[in-house]
Length: 284
Image 1 (spheres, rainbow, N blue to C red):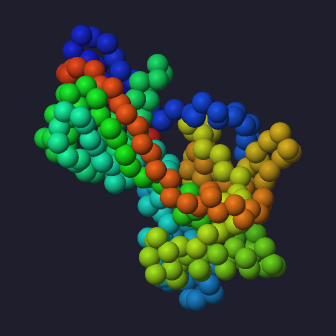
Image 2 (image 1 turned 60 degrees about the horizontal axis):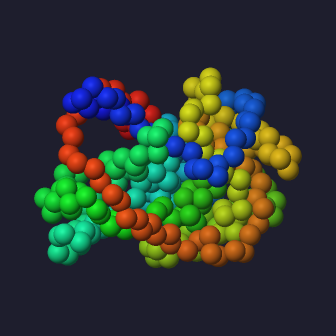
């Protein structure tokens, strides 16, 4: 997104790579075509529901079918975290400031950065007047939750598995059984917070590209990531996220604990501006 400020300067901002992020080459192999199933590839029940590949929230389209619970309940447990991770969202944010008594909660915040390293926060809903006062005070303490690592990786495991089933047919063997076990356990959890830890999901190779791989028009593409340890087969989802078809199994549960962000932001004075352009990938 770009905002033209009153003094004529244009402020460009986007999701920027992390400072420690590595550059990995990905070779596109083939587009994976949609494939309906009579039985759900995850649990074997009748396949009754259209399934978006990847989730519609990150640019997917209907490509296969699963049963109602594996589509709706499993999706509701996992895919909000995937969308928040994909869009760099901070949830349940709380603002505080020395000059304003009490904390104030806000809607979801999209965290963006300019090429110069300036932080830009985009709020989903209109801000509470007290938050504006906090921002005008010049210093804000911000706390919130980052997307759940275990849940968004389980969502990616689901869609990488379904992509493999669309390409090769419903998979057999111990590895496929373990994938299905973890997905069904996530589906049948009492709530999102009760979704079990998945060593398979946490051991996936996941790469998020901050510019779309070109030329990509299909939502699911078979691909190979050329890591320093060797080639890694998998799928590219929505032209932006690579997910491996293999897992470096891990029992490190620290990666599955809720992650919190706490930061003190120093805010400049108020400026007026007009949105001059919005990239379509930022406008879902």
